[in-house]
Each structure stands twice: as C-alpha cells, then as structure tokens.
Length: 390
Image 1 (cartoon, rainbow, N blue to C red):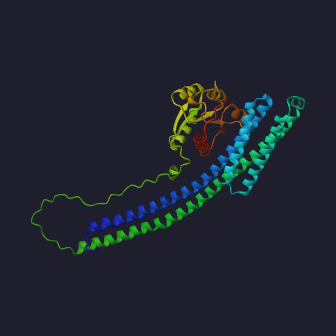
Image 2 (image 1 turned 135 degrees about the vertical axis):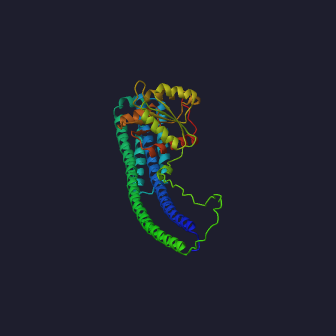
Image 3 (image 1 turned 90 degrees about the vertical axis):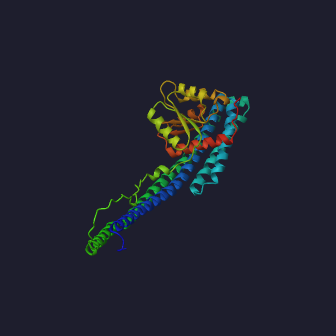
C-alpha cells in the first residue's frame, strides 16, 4: 500500500469510511422495515377479526330492526327480511368460527348464536299465532320478542367488545415490540458507529506518516521546462446521499385497487383525509359536499362503495340513502353504503340500518378498520348477486 501515491491512499481511505457508514445505515433500515412489516401483519389480523365481529353485530342489529318492523306493521316483507337476516348471522358466524382460536371468543360466538336462535324462535312464535288470537294477546308477544332482542343485543355487544379488547392488546404488544426493536437498533448503531471515528483517526495517522515518508525520500530532480499537462479526470468515488425514508409509509392495510369510493361529508378536512386514505390503498375516491352533489355524482359516475356522514346540514345521510335505495340497480340503487356517525345508541343504530346502510362506524373511525370494512363490502358485492326488492 505504501507504494501507492498519496492521492490514491486518501481516496481508498475515504471509500472505506463511506462504505462502512452506508452498510451500517442500510442494515439498520432493512432491519427496521422487516420488523415494521411483521408487526403490521400481526396487527392486521386483529383488525380483520374485529371487522368480522362488527359485521356480525351489525347483521344482528339489522335483524332486530326487521323483527320489530314486522311486528309493528305486520308486513310480510319485513318478516322475510328478518328470516334472511337470521340466516345471514348464522352464515357469518360459521365462517368466522374457522378463524377464531381464542376460547373466550368462541364462547361469546356460541352465546350470540344461542341468543339469535331464541330471538328468531320468539319471532316465529308470534307470527304463528292466528289472527284473532294474535290480536287478543298482542301485548304479550312484543314483550317476549323485546326481551329476546335485548338479550341478543347484549350478546352482540359483548362479542364485539371482546375483539376490540384483543385489538387494543395487539396494539400494546406492537408498541412494546417497537420499543424493544428501537433499543436493539440503537445498540447496533452505537456498536458500529462509535468505532468509526477511531478508524478515521487511524487512517489519518497512517496517511500522514505515509505523506511524510514520501516527502522525505523523494529526490528532487530539476525540470528543464514546465510541460503542458492536460488536465485529467480523477476517479473520485461519488458519495451517494442516503435518504432514510419513513418505513411506516410502506405498511399498507387491505388493498382497494380500482375500487370507486364516493365520500359524502360537509366537512372538507374530514373528506380530504378519507380521500387520501382510500387513494393510498389504490382506490379511486371522489368527494361530494352534500346529498345533492352525491345524487348528481351517481348519475355521472356510479361508485362501488358509498361512505356518508349522517349529520349534515340541510339534507342528512338518512334522506340521501333513502333516495339512493329508491333508484334502480342499474342507477346504483344497490350500492353498498357505510355510515359514519357519532351516535352510539341502539335506536340510532337501528335507524341507520333500517334506512338502508349496510354498516356503520363511530366517528372518528379507525383507518385500518374502515379500509377492512370497505374491502369486505366490496368482496361481498362481487360474490353475492343483488336481491331485487319487491
């Protein structure tokens, strides 16, 4: 090495230092991204289970609303909807049972099925009564059905709350894992970066000694004339700037590629945030600031999924979904709809589902849960043919 020129020695030393720094940074970044991806995948499973639990809860609430409507109005259409809703709850529960490994979750799911069967039996008993007998004992039937409805609602709420707790514990475990990973990465950085200044000092010392030796033993020969030297380009390695991007940007929830989502909200900040969220998942999202704009959008650009706020000035979300449901399937009347609301009472949930929404989320909605719900509705729309309403 000491036979090389001083410039070459300096160049090689700088290259070694740069390579060591870049390798250290890239290794830490790759380790961090792999850990983030694994933690996100684990948290995504908890979010999917919570979305399935919410779907069963909403189907059960919709069934309660159909049973009450049938008993109050005596309509056969509501009775058919109640029976179809009961079958849907059982179908969703059987699909979810294959994924649940938690014994408590399985027990709560069994309690939901038992409560739903008792609720449906009470409803069928009320329907089976003769017309005259039904009028004579009419007050007793609603009391029995209401008692079973209350029992079913409590079972559904306990079932959904259990998976909400599982998701919160998963979040806590993810945060604990992130802290441990941060400690490991800091230790790795200290172990690799602290010796770097020592290496630099050692290289500078060796270069200085080499320069002094070259200056001492190089003979000075008189030059007759200063030749014209053509400048030449030296091979100086380019130090690439390493950009450390945020690894969380690459962690995606469910993909919504090609899905058309219409967001209806009078608050521009909320609608813009939802548009950015859906766009990052691959969806084609558009915004309507009122119910009138949303109906006009249905005429020019039919969405695949509707996400609407309930409380809006003028025409609210209830009025919008009723007008949409009165449209034919070719004009978007069967478009799946998700309601965003700050109301959490059972009466509000029944009103939302009875108006025509398939699902609802409390505001502010969790982004991961919202994307999972929309993905589930889109998959169900592709799998199940729409049922024409008589």
